[in-house]
Image (cartoon, rainbow, N blue to C red; front, side, top):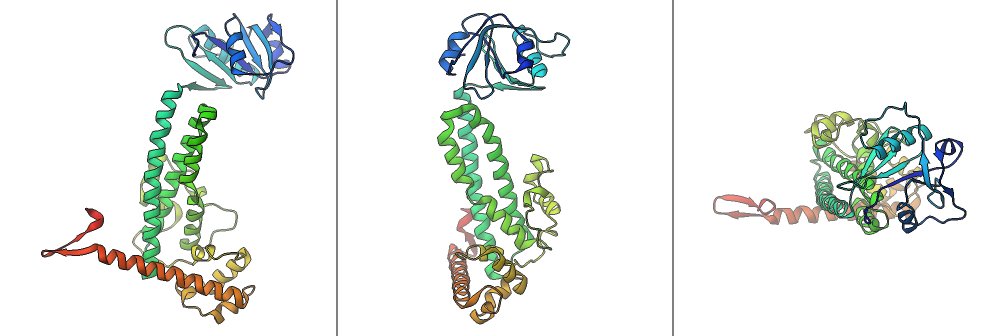
Length: 343
């Protein structure tokens, strides 16, 4: 596209590819590079590259796919590319040379139009900004849920809000993947930023799901398995998410099992976590348990009991400090109370 020439490149090898190739010449031990492909594309005919894009196998090839294969493409090069891909099962890249340059990858019955790096980078940056904004909202939702849990006023709405935001973040990150794949090496920084913004989100969503499901989910199941069947727009509707998860009604008062708290205790084996959840059944009972009560659970022992007790106390202390800060944020102005969060 940069040099203004067209191209037809088939990625594959074997008998099915040989049957559609005629003429041209074979290359021996020709390592694949973008520059070599560009030079070979200056000639008439197509190019054959191996499946792994490591070797250029043939150049100046006349491709002869089955003309009876149906295609909706209009240009000769693109019609040939689609038929080649369907007949051989290999991906085929077609680049036009007339007017506005267009590059399309055909793979079987699928087609993917390539965009310029400038367009892709703009789109990637927009999605990263959205991802950053959603991550802030997710962290705020987690903080709000923790504060309500300490105050024992949590409802399904707060739990669903955390999972909902996690699902939207996951969806946005998935939509970013084909953009980074198309950008190639240029996308390394974008991928790193996206990874940082999504770090820990899925784990928290899974733990919130364990905390608030009526029945503890079976091991190996994911909270997203109940949401994958929803349309993208449904992820923005809390009621739809709540119905899919079985966390209804939204404003019903609920108590967490304590899975998230125990997940934060250092070096606590999963079987011990399961025993603790089975014994105490709720965060309220867990925070009221003494070190001796914890020690009585199979696999805990005196040292772990004191570690768990200290960690739960620390979580409660942090929650109380956050509640105090929120109370300070509400200050009287005249006869009304103004919440600084809304200013």
